[in-house]
Length: 244
Image 1: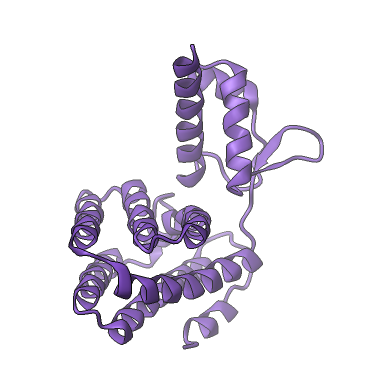
Image 2: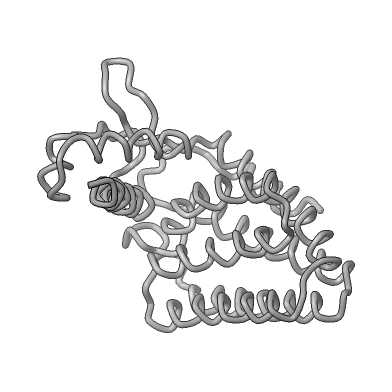
């Protein structure tokens, strides 16, 4: 019985999380528990337990009128996520250069290959998921539980932004027209970072890590500035993208 309950709760969590990260459930959308129960095929209890877990991750939030709604990501939150990512990659790199071993390097290499398979398949949801898993793995390999908790929250929330800016919603990102070039740069950054870790070259590894954050930041800025119906001026983010 306990195993079945755990399985139902995990099934509800994984499916609801997927819907949020791929924008099937969009920011600020009121969550219809009845519709979720029907579509997932589970009872209300595991669905509600999954909602509590998603709330702890910041993906849903309590609605003033009762129930939950999908958390929005504001311009301020975009800035804060990128700021947190800049801080995180520097701290992670400092520890990885000192602590990573051959097994860890192989795990990172396999994680990079997973990103590349998803990119080759043009599966945006898989690209954003495997890329987040790669960067969370980097943090896991530092063996610092506090950094790992931070990474899980940061990269989980960044997945929605990545899905948008990579064209997963078939919307404004299509206007950017350079996804192959972007994926090529991502490929180069991932492998150069691993090589720098192998060489215990902290300066080069940090340079690559920061460049990688700026690459995503620049793409996100362009998407937010050019997407139809955005209704907001995100141009100030472009200046931030140039800050060292």
